[in-house]
Image (cartoon, rainbow, N blue to C red; front, top):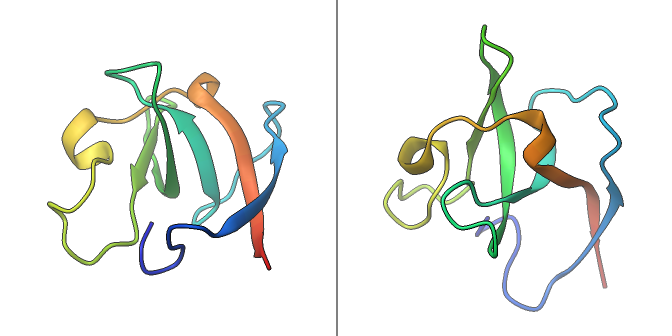
Length: 87
């Protein structure tokens, strides 16, 4: 999520409880291809089939993995929503 967040930032969030999401929300998600990995991404689009298209903030699309590389995710993959960074 560089440049929005950098290594060492402390993120403040809430456990996701299947409540409403809105475009541009920042979420923590289980990586769909490797469930041992979590990623922080921005909600870019609600797809008609109910899945979510997530994007990183890095302007270089090849710099990180997001829905461009692993595809859309189901909302049950969301672990938390990030409200802001601290300190």
